[in-house]
Length: 610
Image 1 (cartoon, one colour):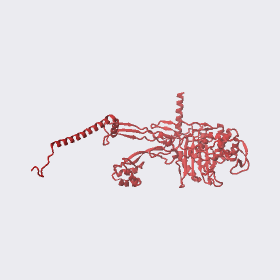
Image 2 (cartoon, helix red, strand yellow; image 1 turned 90 degrees about the vertical axis):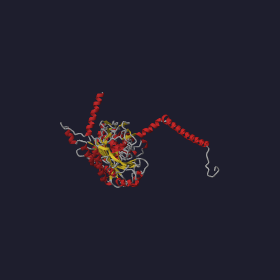
Image 3 (cartoon, one colour; image 1 turned 60 degrees about the horizontal axis):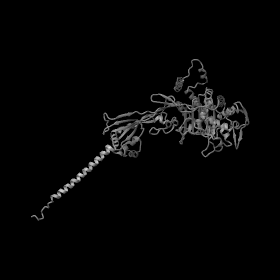
Image 4 (cartoon, rainbow, N blue to C red; image 1 turned 180 degrees about the vertical axis):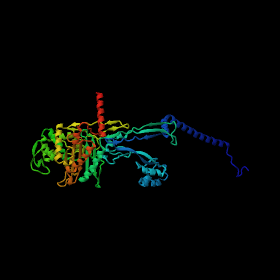
């Protein structure tokens, strides 16, 4: 029944063939397009950008690992460590491996004493590396290892440590968490201390294992040099200890003690202590000997009389009548205690620290000569230390002087200096009138122990040696029977001067009578006839019962000097007499012996070259 409903419709054979050919053409077209894309991609890879793909392939196999250079140590003049780098464990994690960040954070928080949310945030990051704690106590790191947490591991780093904790911190300075110098000598000599990092290149397979015979290359690091300071650690510790006691005793707010070898300008100790808001006195992280300025008061008077004697305006024995008060311009200056007119020699004026007598002689000298001599002593300019944040103080140019500038500057008011400037000025007097260049660094030493000395700074002749000798003799009188008797050191001839200055207020001026703050100081050196140690002590804002330099600062000088002469093997008067006997030999410190060896080496080298 051809025409019935159940008949199946037959598709013409030609239609089937046409459909097949269309599908075949479509598939062939796709294959051609795919082939063209493959050819194009192959051309790009092999011809257009082969270097990029080779580099990508190498990046999959070759790993470059930095080899950290060890930061050089900082040591004192005798080779004792002041700052060094030691290995300490740090804690890191791969967040992609950590399965339960919250649970792991809870476990670590109790060990690390850290906030749980902070740790969870680190453990939940998108990267493959996160710091959890750096420079940990080894015992803490051991506790973390015992937890056996997947994705958490210990990474060894080098951390900067100071055996003396905060001792000399203002001089040494600080490094950041990555051992980069950010202050003090750590910053100044960061390039020498940090060294140059090395690199290890190794070829690995997909599982991270080294490929035998693959690329392997190591560039070793160049470790940082050791910085050898002029500081003596024992003297530094003692200076800080005595400042703690002295500032507390005087009821002061802070204190500074700086010691120097006057012949070389080498700083032997530089200590600063401050009283915190809690009332406790502690070592300061600021090197106030060069960053802090103050009006020095009467310790400037030996510089004033150096100018007077150098200009032949007077001699130490020249006598004149000195009243108890004097008027200059629109101001009245007086001595304390007030006295009737009295005949005083120049030496008497300095011994008694007479403001009026000093002003009278300074007036005869003239402002031009006084200003010029102060500049030669180094006031009003930064020193040769090249220390970060060092202040140059303030010594007004002559055009800025008022009618009262000459008398005030001559007695140490109206001029601001740093403690280092005043110490260097006194070193000039102790060094026969030759101003040394202050320095904190003896040189550097490499890993093999080869020492490279630092080039010495330029010295400047300020006054003739004869004038320096006369001024030193007058300063001896200050300690023997003047305002500085508390600075005496048994067995030694000491030359020095006390200073008691009004302290300027932040709003300007010095405050009214009975409502003033003071800065007390003492500067001196010994032995007076052959100075080997010069020391400056400053006590800021002592109580009224100890406001003078003779009461607040001079005793600290004496205590420190008594320790220093033993440490530095400086013989007393009786010992020096004994050294002249045949067969007596003076003991030397390692630093002294090294200096002698270096001097002998330089003499030998110069003789060969000549």
